[in-house]
Amino acid sequence: MAKRLLMGNEAIALGALRAGVGVVSGYPGTPSTEILETAARERGAGIHVEWSVNEKTALELAAGAAWAGCRSLVTMKQVGLNVASDPLMSLNYVGIKGGMVIAVADDPGPISSQTEQDTRRFGEFAKLVVLDPSSPEEAYLMAAEAFALSEELGRPVILRPTTRVCHSYAAVEILPPLERNAPVPVFDRNKERRVIFPALTRAQKPIIEEKLFSLGKKLSDGFGNSLTGSGKKGIACGGVSYAYVTQALKPLGGEYKLLKVGTVPFPRELAREFMSGLDELLVFEELDPVIEDELIALCGQDKLSVRVLGKRSGDTPNVGENTVEAIRARLVSFLGCNETQEAREPEGAVGGIACPPNRPPVLCAGCPHRGAFYAVKQACKGLHAVFCGDIGCYTLGNAQPLDMVDTCLCMGAGISAAQGLKTADKEIEAIAFVGDSTFFHTGIPGIINAVYNKHDILVCVLDNRNTAMTGSQPHPGLGKNAIGEPAPELSIPAILQGIGGLELARVNAFDLPAGIAAVKEMLGKEGVRVLIFEGACIAVDKSPKTPAAVNNGSCTGCGACVRRFGCPAIHMAGRAAEIDPTLCTGCGECYSVCPVGAIVPGEGA
Image 1 (cartoon, rainbow, N blue to C red):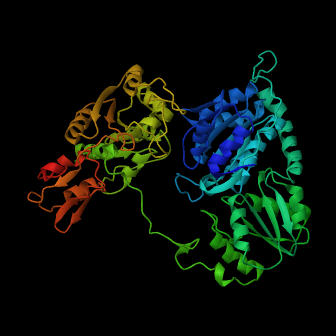
Image 2: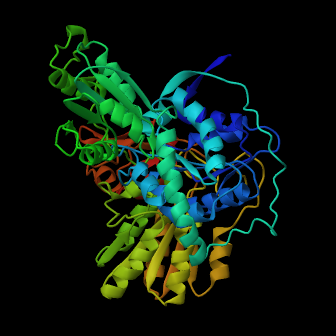
Image 3: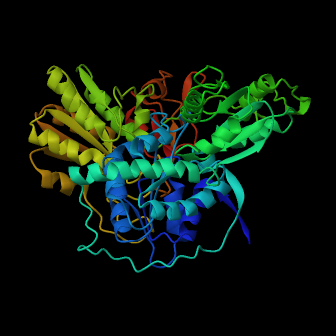
């Protein structure tokens, strides 16, 4: 068969399509986003793909499709699973008919997330099978296998790729579609009612437990589990850590057994075979000591005198990603072998490439969020204001010189947290920020709560017409859907007017004087106030504009433009400010920042 160079996320989507998936839903979040984008691009006739408003909705939609016998895939990142956890926990008891796979991308590091979370633990908690691919090739195969396994169990299966599997590339052999005699999806309400009651839960719990116990034996062979080698020392690993271990072992000698674990529930029989005859073993995994704990428990149960080393013993790190270099260094000591000269990395290098310096993320030049934050900051001078942020590009408003994010918890939480802060401290001005995509995701309930419970807060909706941080995916306010078709364009102002009981205003985010005046006007009122800052993201608005420039004859070198505004296009060149025309987008935000009016359109410099 032909091979294609695929990103891991692309491989997962193509594996699902190979298995005959009929419905794909999700919410964008790095490192999972490209799964759904690939499904939208590669889908065949009759396959429904959508960006849902949040992960809970996406999972519930996928469950409904699976109840009718359709195979469904729902995608999210690890923190998105928190949002979807309510229906997930109940769905295992109610069950499904068509195969349902929940692709949850974990983010060790974390690289682009609020937290490190190990979805294998969530799978244990929810009593669901978790498949843990170690490479894009394996992710492609597992994605297809997961649907058949889900139908066999009558329950969802979680596929847990991590960042390096999601975003690495490999030449993947594209296999023929899987044969499946699937009936036309239909939900027979007379036979298939799926209503969760305590009686159903009590009856299903022992069935779930028994299936998981018996599945542990079945999964000993295949589904990413394997055992190779021989000797008195053992190495256990799973997921992408298996790829790191095999690469680290190439230049090393020594005898060892190698256990690869790709599933939850744990393959206990294979692990028993692995530990037979071992003196000690070393475990590599991301993030939690899931494999390690199972091996320790098995040693206790079977009274095995095998020394288990890993996170619990302090022999491997318990946070962040593993690397080939760190694993190789530990294996040299563990196996008692010598590292070859070729295996050694130069100091300060990874994979033979010099490590670049750390570069913290910043708001782009021409970002409308910078203007919104600046306007609010100027309007709040002299006030005891607290700024509640949210998840998105605008979280970067916490950086200097803007320094405009005092709290950030999870999506939509800024609006609710502001209510709690104001309730506890009546003397503050509680101001919340939320993006347009997050407004639809979880922002609306917070505003409804504020109105209903008569809170006194200002909510700033930063509408940049984009889901920018995750790659410009559409949302309900943009007039198109996940597959690029026209869709109803939901109006944020109309939704807020429909809620009622609040003060509403709109302002151009690039017009700083108007923004400052609008914020001051809102601060002079009480109750729930919503100010919408409207200005397109530079990834959306590609219209040509004249870059700004500094009139050297007027510039006093005060540096206010750099110290107060922080646009990456502006810097000090000696005693005068200078604007890089290759970075400047011509948004015009900075014109009113200069106290002496030295920043002007380029042709007027």
